[in-house]
Amino acid sequence: MFKKMGVYALACALLFAFFIPGIFLFKDVMQSNTTGLKTSGFNTLLIFRIGVLANGNLVYYSTGSAGEAVDAPVATNGSYVGGTALANKIKSFKIGATSISRVEISLVSHDTTFQNIRELINENGTGSDTVLYKNFGALKTAWNLDAFNNDDESVYDVPSTLSFAKMLGMIEYSYSITPYTNLNFWANVQDQINTAVPGLLDRAYLQTYDGGAGNNPGTWQNTLGMKVIPIVWVTNDSKPSQGSTAAQAQEKFANWYSQYAVAGGGYWNDYDIEKMGSSYTSYGSGLTSVFQEKTGESPPVSM
Image (cartoon, rainbow, N blue to C red; front, side, top):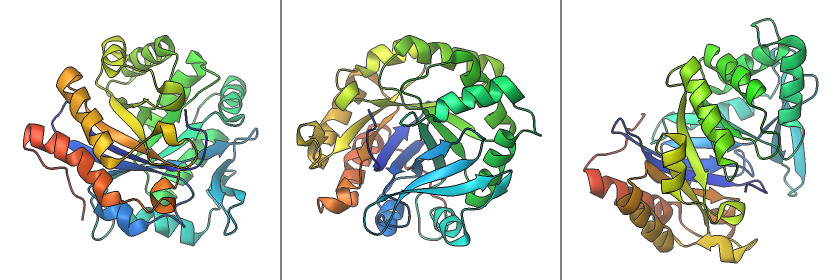
């Protein structure tokens, strides 16, 4: 279960034969190791996390210079208000010497975000004139975003989830999920979203640590009806027993690939790689050595 700000590194070999090594970033984009993020083989960056307020405005839960939590407004009344420096930093991940080609924003239920989304949709719908539509459209443009990541861990409301996903599809977001429990809910969501808009929900990142430590990727794949990307937590000092070294992670990914032909693998990194003095390169190699060796393919690179 995602409990803190962090960096989430992902590498996925999707069914249509390309790879998405990626990283889940929190703590925050202005402070994390940009060079490490761009040059360690990951090609998907997930920014954790955005919050939706009761009025439909958006905030970025970032971190101040003293380590304090900062709720930074990024979209208000249909306009981007997050500032040029933040926008340029996020857009820079896909510019220059980089392997990143997809940037996602993640929403998680550590606050009232999903309750607010449900109430806003029930009251106003999801039309292009609604503040929810306008704000997510403004954020997509300002940050040059590619996808939205749903990490709902408490509300689990199918009707509003479906309506929200279809709205995001209209704004030209792709859609991914990061479950740790409630398999039947996610299977229902996957089926309904992709029935309504085929291919919109294109990735499932499965938590396999902390609250999701007992998850079996094969079981989730069978029930979801799509390949999953299992996620492990890197070495950390918050819950050391839940962490994996790069070598341990590589072994897990190799076993999951051998047993279940998973779509790839990834990491939850609560600023742990920086804090613990670990190596982005080593963790990236732990992924690419498994999936590229198995297929002989190379991940796409955006220059």
